[in-house]
Image 1 (cartoon, one colour):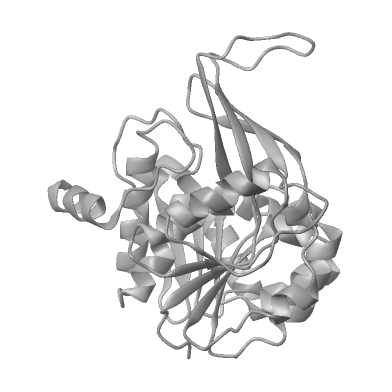
Image 2: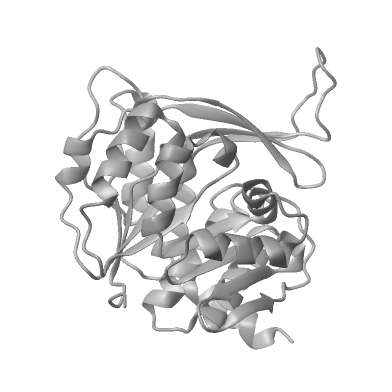
Length: 311
């Protein structure tokens, strides 16, 4: 049985989002004028901010660069109250992606990797992990060759009572099975969106996909995020529960999944049972999609007010 969670240690990847809001994606070879744009940290940053806004202590154990993008990432992490566990990687900057957000709120990414893809086992081994830590692992880190080698080795050294949370991300199909299977075996909470769940299992039905995932992973449980349809929660001994979403007018889905995972872990840290933690995470996602930008997770008081007024 896992110990109570007192800190989130994120060993995924923080990079810089170059976000452009556009009416629609251009055709191949075409162009489109953005209605607005911003430059902001993204990736794992969004998960950490979501958890920190719930007053859960958060630390970043991933790699980060020594150039201007790395400086921006560290500055924004510090502003969010996130402690940084690694020194900057010399000679390489933090990577970036271009995030295109269309008129329906859907986002499309193209990514150029940097220092965040150079994590070593020695860096990870320098992190003091206790039984009350929750360790967040991103599928992006399991795709990068250096990171996946380091993470696969390091996960096997963690205290058995520490809580491992894995979000495979959209590149889940690119994670080698030799890496994925040991990670699955050590995962306590597996959180993914519906597309990823179906792709991983080959199932066409969400509930069957959640069952198939639980057979491979999830020592504590599996969460399948379904956007406006809420999420599925599959826990040992309790089976599948559908946690309904909240009806809101979405304008930007960028970062909604990150908000869901970060708030879910923070709710577990508060001692909430998984069903209530999932409902709170659904509320966080609902609020996040009504705001423009990637790091739009609400704080603890905002979620409390939202739930108090919800049906």
